[in-house]
Image (cartoon, rainbow, N blue to C red; front, side):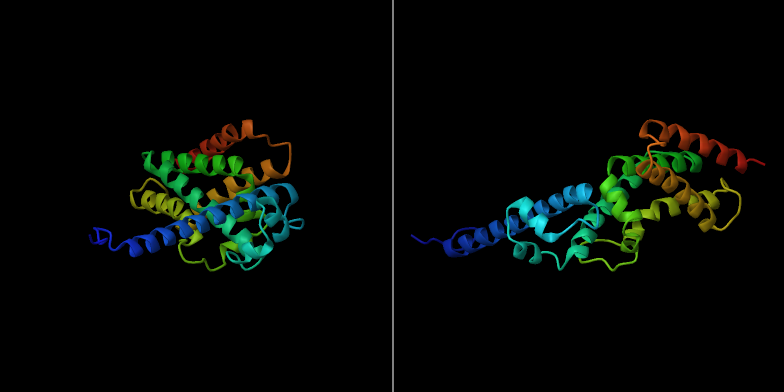
Length: 216
């Protein structure tokens, strides 16, 4: 009786299953490395971070880390990229659930604020400790980190096109709004004088002042 089936010969199926199993193992190891790196950075910061400690945390030799990442900065860059991916998704959901321009700006701003508060390790890597990650070329599989800000830019440009914002360069609005919400998140992460509980109310109060400035 032939061992040739729908999925090929028995040997072909075994090779394919073996390759799929190794791919899953590599992916699981990569996830474990990124998770351990995130936890270690939260405890030790940039200066105290090392690949050796990450390897110890997951029970592997440092060689296993180097199979996936070239050095400390490369690993931390990938941690930041995972943050940018989630960040962009959350901003897009906020945009999709809102209506006019001001409502979208509030929703996107609140999504930004909530991401920074709930993902402090990623946020510090993305915007505070290693801001140059914004300029670093991304590896395959990752979109440009600037795409995460495309939601804000689209909100502004569409608002200008509909006449819901006074005519000004789009960069004026996007820079102002980014500086505003980034300032709140950074102050919260850097000082106890800006607790998370009051940030959203403060942001909405600022947005009300912004809205008044748009009125004739």
